[in-house]
View 1: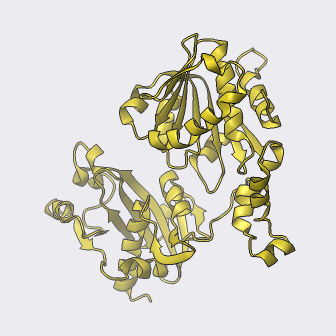
View 2: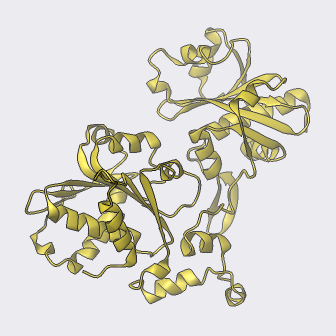
Length: 395
């Protein structure tokens, strides 16, 4: 079969061993630009590994439908280039390829909780898992016996960054220039993003798209809402000599998020993420969880939309105040937060929301409203900062 240098690097990483003969890399992470053959090359390794011996190979994206629409379509397209592909049978109902030796390649989705928690396999492949949580990944990882492959275009900070730094992980970077089979029209499209003088004249240049899709590098989206926040240590936050306030965003299936903040009275807010758990996963209820984190007398600014949850906290003695709601409260609150210097204690969920909190843009028009997705910490933060500014008379 025809293969690129990317396939060669993956194949080498799969088989490389340490001095004791054990596998050197548990995690093989493919980063880089579009059309660099990352996914296609991984699918080629699946095909060869399936014929090698009896294995269960799984491919994951956020949902099974998403995996079928993308990776399965890519695999079907690649099949004619595999010499023995006629020996594979496909179960359309279950989206599983069966090999003569009973190996399987299975199309899966991170949205199937029972499958995630009951999965057992040999090789796992995560394709562009931007919205797959670290917990979901960990559940599948611990049930995979051989190795894990990940391919993505690194658009923002992600739990994959932490994984990449482990000594049993290898990162293979590639661009479309590593793929001699990249269709010419797609190559031209990617090259049109490069900020050359000609492309600027043609109005096709786009620095963000060139960084991500051309060079395969991480870049900050132009529609990102918050920028230039800085990390601080939890110890330093705890020792700040300022009053503490709390913001709470209710969630039953989605995370209930709690942030604590301090204000220096001038131009700096300090943030400590405290809670990110759905109420459905709190066996003793939200009041019991909060009582272990904050004092009941503390100011707790909450989303007024969930009346029952708010009244439950009041009945349990918490000092509950309602966040400002109404026309333009979201846009106005975001504008207010953006005026201050923000320092925050690291939390993976908080950082993920910060990195991915974006203005909604349709057909090039900024609608001046955030995309309503993974914004639980960001909402809680806006509630409490807006309240504090009004309470202290800060404009």
